[in-house]
Image (cartoon, rainbow, N blue to C red):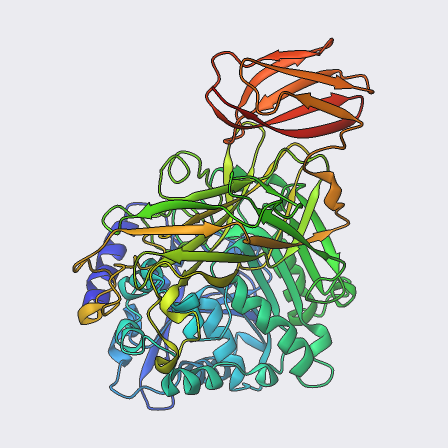
Length: 627
């Protein structure tokens, strides 16, 4: 009934402006039920190749001049017939719902073969669509319809896994909430299995089937999408396990894109959150059309010689190619998290010290950007400095301004040495790129629920001992970003990232009472600490670890340190300019040649970065101002 009412409301609203007028038909399934279909045939085309879209979001939406692959309302200029089908149980196919429906992939099989039997189809059929519309393409391909020629899933993979919903044991609250709003009905299954068990094991084994993908697959993803992990695990698997001759035809495109579905950020748009990637706009559609032209129209356009992988290196904002996935050529560089808030390549001089903060579940650190899904949340790259980093419930670690580009390609792993005064709590990590103007743009995030530190099965869970030190590792999703010279690398550690992840009540009681996604029953304030032996491992390309941190004393001597009212500089080099930055990255002092003394009058006590420019070289020095 809900889907029917929404559909009627949509039809009424579409009458207010021009819409496309498809042929409406219904497609019989294996059990005799029928799925609603809209068929768009270009004028003058008697028969031709077909692109199929199977959607749970109402096929009528496409009538509003919104056909995929950039066709929009220009169907008569298209080389393809489009068939848009409502999923069983959704919108126009609501009447096809049954208590024990066949697998969605089997429905897809019958849709493909029905299309192949129509007079307007030449038997060449490809599939397209993003998110759920991408997942069902894998499910359809699993059943190997004889006339399915190729598939083009975006921001999607076929997996249904424990880690997808409980990364490091912490529920993705807003994600499951949004899926429930969309009518997928996954909440009971997910909430009834809060630990890794036989149900998850069976589910995972039946939803990872790379050897069943027997047609060419062009996967499209985005670095700000929440499906990065699953996509980048499934792609190399199909390359390796698809039948002989097919694996080498698979292709992968990774752009600087969010998942999309609301606001202006979608796969392929230039605007993503608070950043713009003009040279990435439309790449997904243009390459997908070239892909379909090769397989569905038989055009000799060189697609078979195209790179196996094309990926966007954010920061430098350039496209790169690779012959395989995962990417190679990186070295693991360790960045140490010092108790004064600095992040550098030098181990602590003294084995002691920590940063401590309090976490109040009634006032959690908020989610602002990143790989979110819910419509009321910002999605993609957003500045964390005001919303997250201005609060007191975090430990923040920041490099000095980089004297060389740091080219990141891969998974950042953050190793934390932690303690709490409670029996359970969470630790959350955000990785950001700090611009010279102070913006702290989020790249990735990851949670960790402490009761799952030994594993995710019920027998693995255990309370922590208040005050005891524990070592945990948080692996962030794969990303490609270049931290440019003058930028900073930052790691924010909090104990909440809400509502992206469930907020821990810190009481070691039931995590989700009554299977609620979010509860506050007897919440406790936790005092949590990050210790001196914490560090992050970054996979970097050609990075010199000595390119950040204090310079040698024989090059630049800064004194006194700590300083009170003045900082004196002596050097064997010519210094053209000196800049002093505070821990937020804000420039507080700027002085040109000649430079020998800097006044620190009016500056607050704390840690600062002094940056000296000599010709094309930049030298950094850590200084403390005391009163």
